[in-house]
Each structure stands twice: as C-alpha cells, then as structure tokens.
Image 1 (tube, rainbow, N blue to C red):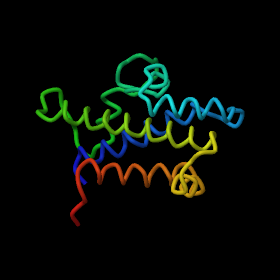
Image 2: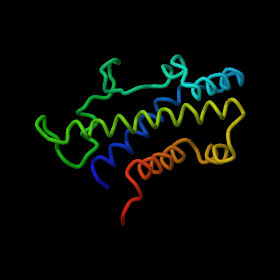
Image 3: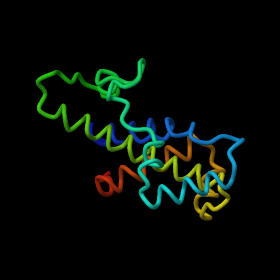
Length: 146
C-alpha cells in the first residue's frame, strides 16, 4: 500500500469515528430521517454537523500534521515534495469517512437503512468502518494490485 493509500484509509477511519457522536440511543427516528434527507439535499446546516478536517487547528487536542505523518513508516519533512498530497489524502479520506458514518448511522436511527446497511451494522462499528474504508481506498485509487 502506498503512503497516500495508507492515509486515505486512516483518514476514512478517523472521520467515521468522529461522526459516530452525531446520534445516540436517544435519537428520535424523525430527527434522524430529517437529517438524512437534509444531507441528501446538500443542506448546509446538515453538512455543517458532519465533522470536517481535524487538521484545521479548530479544536485543542485535535490531530496535527505530525500525528498524520506518524501513521507512515517514514519521516516526512517540511521540504518533502509530496507533503501536501499526503495531507490531502488524509483529509479526503476523513471527509469521506465522516459522511459515510453520518449517513449510515442516520439511516439506522431513522429505520430506513438499506438491506446492505442493516447487514453491515451487525458487523460492529470497527469492522464495518474498516471494510468501508478499504472499499473507499479501492474506489479512490482503483483496485489494488497484488
């Protein structure tokens, strides 16, 4: 796996985990359905509820560029040509993961998930998110060559 693929995968998982707080066991079915419909319509208020890049520095204790680069098996210096591409890969994965989890969990609480979503919810959060992250990497870069 390339460095970019690794960071898209890691970013997806981090984004999905960050979006997990959007709903909980006390979530009203109608609220979840309204949120899901608003997401599908591209409503800015709904989109603002989905976590965005943690690298913005908006939150104390949030991820930093150094944290992202620590996920790789090599040092990434200030002058590395691919530094921005690597950060973009993580952020792209993060955004995709956050949106995936927001949609999946909203659909679950709204009771309107697809059969595939319902089945994936049975896998448990970590396994379900890992599988979705791997699928996203394949979609993002094309099928992996062994």
